[in-house]
Figure 1: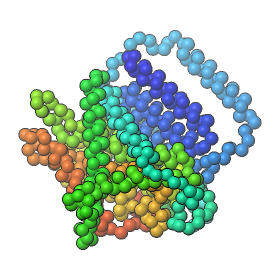
Figure 2: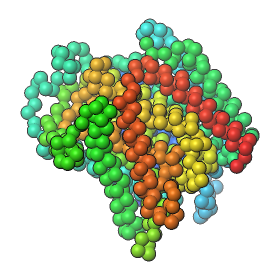
Figure 3: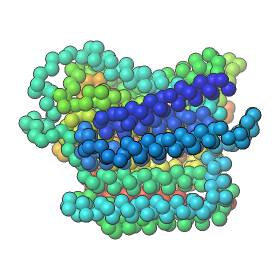
Figure 4: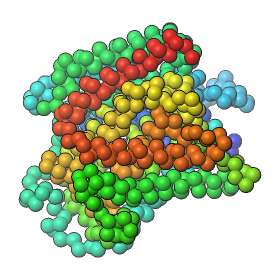
Length: 171
Length: 118
Length: 335
């Protein structure tokens, strides 16, 4: 148990440092790469929770696919090094209010007494395996699964429509 | 459970170490006589013009978006393929609907020329 | 976790890395000799008997090459890009078993690193999706417009064909009812999946050749358009790493194809003499490598627009069709 705990805090520290480096970096390409690193660390955390399928999907979809899109967008805009104009005036007060709200919520949840205490149930060998996820997904969560396809379709059409004008100009 | 994946971690560490050693070897043994002309970008011997980093076509953005969406589709297909023998016909119809919806998107992309490269 | 286990894993990891490294060195020679034969030439035969020392000579030459870093390059990422490119090529084989369990001197040995994990196939996809970063970063960090365009183009090509590659895996997964590589090999004990999945195997081969940027999909080599693509500014050992990544991936996809479709280490008398396993696997891998080299000698290079259209309009729909048809057959026939 203690080894798990040490691993968790080590990985959590790396993830937080990568996230801070991502925000603090002046160069957008570096930011994107720090985010990839953060995603990989989070994937390892999932593995620590015995969620192997989710861990590998995290690497494939987030670190592998979504960040390629981010990099392409950075290169499309050509704004790797430029700072983003001036600060927005209401940004600072709003972020403080939202940050305090989040901290309050977290404190409330942690201080409540009904958090599960004591030993956790033993995991079965099958836990988190592709087969067990498939069984649940295609029986109990059928509707969300099919709705996902509509969501993906909408995203696809959106991307095609907003780039249409520029693509025609490019020809 | 986690123990099954530890060997992969060992392999990743060793592979990364090797890659850095190879880079270091080159820096250790390679000669170094830099001059301004050598440090110019290589453009087949022509004098370089314009910035080295320019904006790339919006088309790459579109390809990346389509890639993400179909990648997510495949992530759903994989666990489906594992349990297909258990969920049988129902599972087949579920997946046929799912693929059908995304296929409609692919056909839309095709018809609007999103897959054409100028 | 005991020390003995750690040593065992380290030794197995070293073997995997040596397979890729040694394979890389001699695959370059193999390719040059085979291509030369196909073009009625002889090929490199001066360094050592049959040119066997040629890879060593090439390596020594590259070590003593000058390492140029262009003035406009981003130094850190320029150094990091070849490392990010080569690591995925070296770790792909982690889930491929080299043979069945072997008993030697009263102890049984398992000839694989992590082939029993239940997400094995997805691991292959995850690693290959990380492999694109090295290329796009190399292009961007070089500060060269041709390298940038080459890097972005290669990346778009790789992600496009990754979809078809992933869909080709679905057939064997459905037949085996598992994503574990061990289970997929066990499922082929009586019949290789290439017989049941001929279309899947074809899609896999085409997509894999495109994914690793080999002829006829070798855009990074299109000298007349892009100078050399994403590695135009690289020299010396950093160039060697890109080269190693390309050939390492070529070897890795041959191992993967042999395992997913050609029965992996299985072959006649495997139960009686399990040590035949690695030999069978080696023969299958060499046959596939020969095929990939043969492609280069036979086909002219695709144009970039043709290449993207082929991936999206032909290979992806075919991959989906293969999934649906295989699914229908499995459900109707049962099994």
